[in-house]
Image (cartoon, rainbow, N blue to C red; front, side):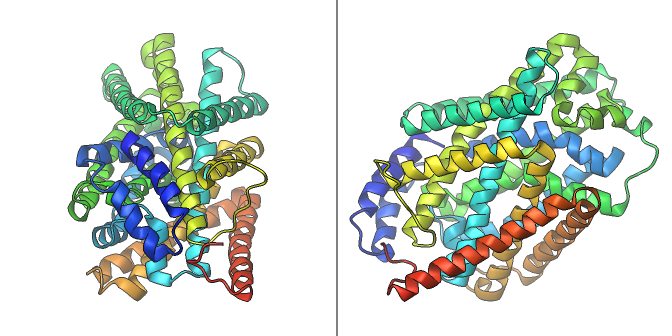
Length: 466
């Protein structure tokens, strides 16, 4: 997140406090955010969010489901993401807005239950990703001290990182944007160095194929694709900053395509590097820290340290940017009158309050769920929200945004197929997370229906400030 974007948001929240309706607030938003982010900046932001804990934590989990075909799972996930990105690109090109997905949903469905519920699903997906990042940080940090992996220690370190991210964000530090950009370059460069060096040191072999008895079943492979999609979903950060980008009608789509392309290359390199260094059973045994384990055979303890430090940099910088992004989205939903807000005696602006809510939820998830369950919950929530976006564009806006019907339907079908395969796999291996997901989605929709009905009974409608 750039300093300019941060300054825009602070100014916008003050301006919105004196606006009497959203139709007046939107021009105020556009005034403060226009042309503050170049194409290079947008690509840096997108790749900085996408290339983080996902690749450090998910590689082993994807290998567990897909077997020796796990590099292919990342490639197929990129294809599914490409179809998904089409709807977001079309919407962002037509209506570039800092509201991003929340604004897209509102244009498709109006300010009602579906818009509020799906926007909350997206926000929760981002918070779930924060807990994934936090636990990944804890897992890799313990490797430095050669301490046996302990859930309580991982949780404590993860919550500590979330608190640090909160303090940095609450302080309004002007260096956050520069720090995030620098760390994005550092972690991308470091991951490429790791992947290329590991492939070179192992002679371009692929040990993962040698340790596998059978190729994964189609259902397992598709479930792996669903999980791998989490490593790409960060491209939505670009759409959430649509009108901040220079020439957004042209550059939003370009930034998304470039960011996904960069990630495809890096993820493929990493997957083959891990598979070159470790057998499949070894990858699965170290699934929460497979990149660090893959560095050990090729480079010894120095390689382990390099990878661990890289993971710490990636997770810390990613979490700092993510906490701000989620709190901004929740503040946007509050301004749209789609979610309630209570000060609970806290001073300051709404965005400061949503920072508190964000870190509390992320901390609870970090404490009570392991990496596998956090990733599973995030995949299910994200794919449900993604299908809702595509259906909204197909049903209500495809003519307005000039979207291709076949691509929209293709995106819906692909999402539905991988989601169904993932749920079917989890019903067998971890039915609790399926129950938690279904109950969670149901509660979100019930909560939105109750909240919006109570507002109507009180004579207020979504879009009116309390």
